[in-house]
Image 1 (cartoon, rainbow, N blue to C red):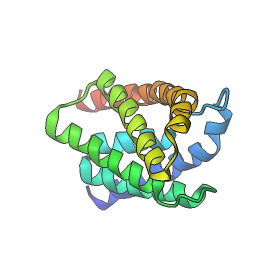
Image 2 (tube, rainbow, N blue to C red):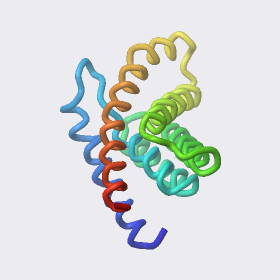
Image 3 (cartoon, rainbow, N blue to C red):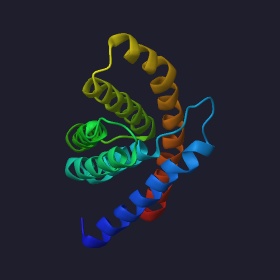
Length: 163
């Protein structure tokens, strides 16, 4: 990726992070909000491969760890880095993803990220089960809906460029 591509991705990351910290609260219902940062990581990993997915997963996770008022510094960094790398490997090595598959990978990446995060923080099985049912599952569905819209619009722009 050239330096202009990195600059565009960085600017997009700043916009996505700002959306996550502001607009996501407005879009939340019943304390469930979409995860724009996870959509960004999956989109970058699908488009740019495992190295870029790993890098931007690290940057996004570290930024969230520093910004969030929690004591588990590094938990988001590790989980988002793993997801960025894994999604990039999936797209690069195994198959070319269409829209439903991209949304499915986004959902799977969301769950993997949450499970790694819960494992690192050392939560008990009962707490993880409760968080999974009350927080992770609804947020995953909401994020998949928003991500599906983003991927649809992104695929539309690709088709226009090739035509």
